[in-house]
Image (cartoon, one colour):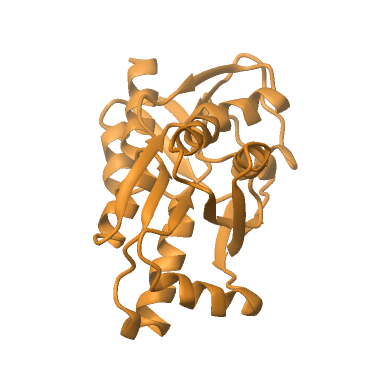
Length: 235
């Protein structure tokens, strides 16, 4: 039987799906995420909720869910925001569509560089509001600032590493984020003949920085496609 370590919780349905193909998946969370709304930002965010057509950026489903919960919890009287949203594709885009139904998705892209390009191409954008975590790459803010676009950045959640020392040998390793990659490799190494699976180019790049292993990138950025990539590879 093929043995896989998944570095993030996935559904039992996906684990059983893999098991039916003779692939056993063990799950260990290598990061945890906690809301971290900063007091100094709350008045601006409360004001932003009522600003129609404000340009807003999401690059993580965690940011989408954290902000939506804040709005529905403490600011329900303000109603749903009517923003122009730019978002990373796939699972983040799906979260935006579900939780911000009155906003307009002005652009989406598969990575931060592509998203920054779309924002720049929209000549009407002079200021953006970027909701993110405490660990984020500089691509979007640096690129936009170089093109004269003001970036209001709000750190609304915290990613905390949870390293585990892995004794058992696995045939493959599944990574859903650069943060999980960092946490995993802070305590472990992978034999060169083992295969890594990454949810996207950014996560794959993080793996390349740590190991010279074969990397398979999922066709779409969600858990179902990740496990499908594992099954297809070993079939």
